[in-house]
Image: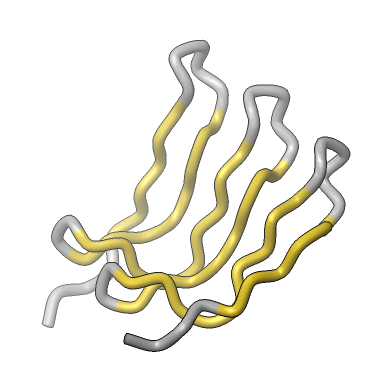
Length: 73
């Protein structure tokens, strides 16, 4: 099995958009997405490319406002 590799994606202006890990092209482990102003937008975990567990969405100030439980497939 391959090891997870760091993954970073940036907005066109160079600010951080997303960070996490991939195995091959599949997201794995903990991921975070950010708005252009740097506040966190969403976070959660992947398992073999599938969203799993609790995913948190954050308001414009970066405070959690919604938690979604992903259904197992």
